[in-house]
Image (cartoon, rainbow, N blue to C red):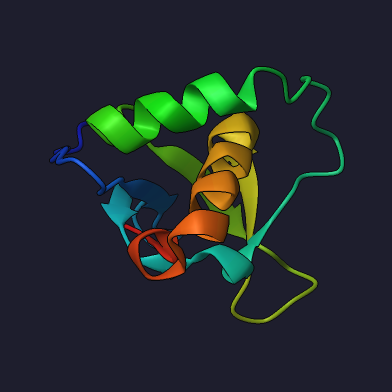
Length: 102
């Protein structure tokens, strides 16, 4: 399975599996559409450092999600809980710049 990734400062990408083909695609989602996975066991540590890196370099690795069956128009994070938390820190200072995740 392959996917193209374009990384630019202040822009980051989200791969969402297309349930019809199994391929991944990029979609732009608002932060409020993302739900944490209750089974996530990783610690959300060093968020300030990660936020500074994302602000300077852009998001280098995409946040992976799947459709949330309980909520319409919502997505559950599969991989990237820490990245999302860091982006939320950035969004608290610059809401327009960080409100949407490609």
